[in-house]
Image: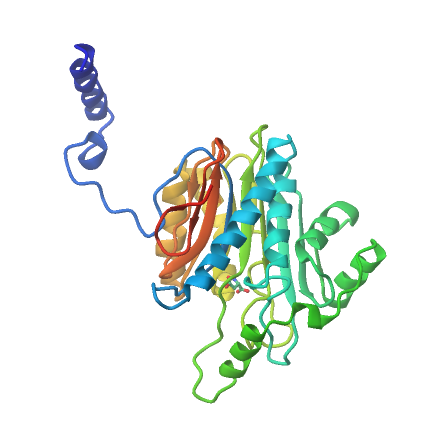
Length: 348
Ligand code: ASP
């Protein structure tokens, strides 16, 4: 140890005392335990999630776990390649979400859940933190990648949000091929619908919604979210995922956020915008603002869920009030971590 170090330590403790820091911050007491997934992670350029849900160990097979991790890793590789090429964060989040929409393991695009009429109605939104431009689609039936349609609404229409037949027609007019509903089918989601229709079934089921947040070399952030919603949802039900400020938000002054959980409550709590507003108006760091929304506000409104939230400096928070949040991130130096439980599994 150099002679300087003890003096630096004394100086640091002195500064902490002057700033009124006590306990863990000054190093004299046990740090308060971070809520699940709540600890901040630094130097992140892209993060993705595959939904909040109940995934205690042993409830999914090792094959299913592998499939989730592979899907997250593929999305992270695709999005981060674009960032390395100097492309904007908006491109990275769209590309990452497209990979997850194409992966039948997730509840978005192919693999989306069924509504009560055994149809798929898809919701998605995307937002650019630099200028607050955003695009969203709700209740889409025949568009393979709703996230790209959301971006088209943002870039090729004067609107922010389009729904139903109008959104699918807008896709066709912009050269997106028509996709029949059977493309979205998976046996697993069909079985879930039948189970949800049993008389003794519990409430509507979500899970495996997907999302991405990114920051590029210009420190511009972006966010994107895509979902099939809740199994056995009423026809026409729209959740938080396509609603800017509820399921998705991005602002260079604060944060990029993608939410997952009971959509109705995320709408009522204006969750994604609230997280950003807490940061903007109180100067709270991303982990504290995210914990406030996810671990206090959403539960106080009677629901559970999680978020991925990334600030322009590359600090990521992934708090959740569900037993798990399927998520992963890639750091500036290319380290990939995927998390299906609350573990840290490096994959590349
Ligand atoms: N938030 C989505 C919705 O309510 C569901 C989910 O995230 O699992 O549509």
